[in-house]
Image (cartoon, rainbow, N blue to C red):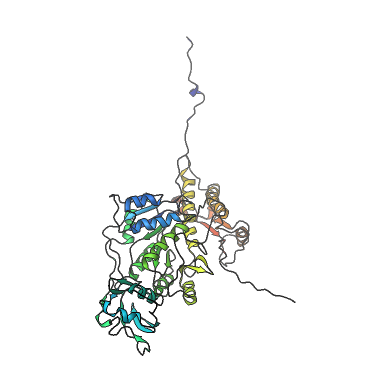
Length: 494
């Protein structure tokens, strides 16, 4: 029998595979932090439909209603491959709004319904609102009276509860208060007096602050276990809690969105957030009421976190978008002055623009889409850079060749963000800040929309080289921005 020598003595083949890289964090993953209890005991659950949330939390829950508004938008978080994580808070209590309740008005109802020009001072969160010329002659019930008052009252909601009227602030927390009294120097019927609302017998109750597990603590507890970028909650939060969250979020890769119903919040907490340059906290105003504002927020989130960044011209702005399941804000405080202040102080709203339901997205605290796409770009650059180093069975040499490969990995991301419309090619660089060769910098910014530069390897400090660090890579991008308004001047010649 012939002896056979193994071929591996001549040709020795080893099969290796490329190491597996990481997937990019999906910017469209959202988390609802809720103080409602689900039917399960899980730390969190992820959802891709509203029906599944309703099955766990009940169809009448606020959490299910929020999820319904998130998934009702078109496009929504699923368009960009996102999922909804719902995370139960640990022993968390919502902040409560202040209110005042009248005594029984049964004996006074006939007199109230006969008022044609009534006066009432309502002090909401220490701010006085004088209501005058209140006409109840078209009303037949106490609920009708409440509706008429609400048409003139911006920062509190009046409801008929049994035989009483309840005036509830649209803010929450211990600073949230409501009282009623006579208008000083009023000329109409004094509705605070005997025979009407009898302010001296009303029962005020100040609001309370939130307590238990905070949003920041819940993020620390869960962010390593479940992916999310957008952060919202169903609980009411007082101003100090919002400021604390805004400060904590700003240092992390999250966007926190919160709802407001009081017009006082525009020049209040929203301006505080804007002044602190806390651009990762997004303030949303919907003055109908706090519960309604919370659901408007959920709809906004569903529409806002919907960009598929791997597509072509998919980058979006929230300005003038329509929200499903939400009617335009018709609160008493809506008007040009509030619109102007919201534009300056950085708060988005949902209004009727000549009959067209539209999100009004402002740049007072930067635009939402800038912050959202900034994170999407960051996530993609991190992963592409990591995968370039990871997916080799040998090494990336600490040479210009190796640096060119690393920069090419970053360029792949930048080119994709040109494709999806976030980065603008053909727009000139208009900042005085440059790096590398200024001419090459400006030409690349104009032609490609971005410029990637690293210092030459030969100039690298020996200490950095010994640590196997790459030279600093600098990337300049030119945002495409978005057109939100236009001025037109027409000259007609006869």
